[in-house]
Image (cartoon, rainbow, N blue to C red):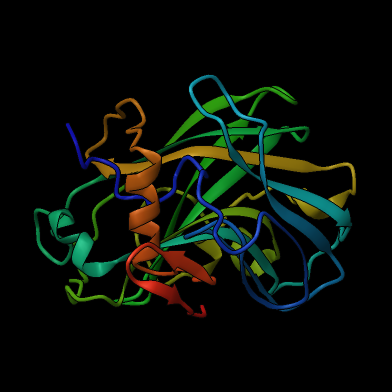
Amino acid sequence: LSNRNIIINGAMQIAQRLTSASISGTGTTFVLDRWALERTAAGTAVVTMSQDNEAPEGFSKSLKIDVTTADASLDTGERWQVRTRIEAQNLKQLKYGTSNAKQMIISFYVRSNVTGTFAVGLYQGDGNKVCSGNYTINSANTWEKKTVIINGNTSDAMTLDSSLGIQIGFGIGAGTGYTSGTANGNWSNTTTNQYANQTNLLASTANELFITGVQAEIGNVETEFEHRSFGQELALCQRYFQEYSHATYRGVGTFCGRK
């Protein structure tokens, strides 16, 4: 049962760059390793994205979104998502582009003071397709475990290299250009399906959201979160980012590097 989880840093333990950042405008900002906050069509909202010690049993860290400047009326083309990306060559087992394309189940723990409908939105680079699944936060300020099932894409094969395979995003706010469609786990070119029915977390400065224990695995049955050691997770993250600082190594001398 090892190597089930295709998400890197799903337990939000690794934060080599920063542990907190205030984010506004358009663009993509990394804080925790492999996790970025991506914004399109800038509005007035400002949020803080950080690594936090609030976590459910069995975990020690989470990714926190805290709204510091609200935007209750998002523009049509505005989209805020906490996202991670998976290399295409790590997804060959999905068999996309064939009649045997596999389902994928995404499970995670979430906590917020805001109840309602939220969306997990996906994007596949090959084919330029999106899909999504909804989940409901039922109880305020309570850790809840959620699952979303994504159907296989039988139409678009992935180029199995280091390019983008699939992006998985957690919506925190979006305009009607992304929210007015249907979240049914099916792949399409309809962008309105990507964050269908998404609640606007950005509507109040009182709002916050925590996520951890993110796992994506083949099939439609969730398993317990695959805990890797801190060293294993760090090594996986260092494929994409590694920060060097002045250090002295016995018998080697001084190594000077830069990120």
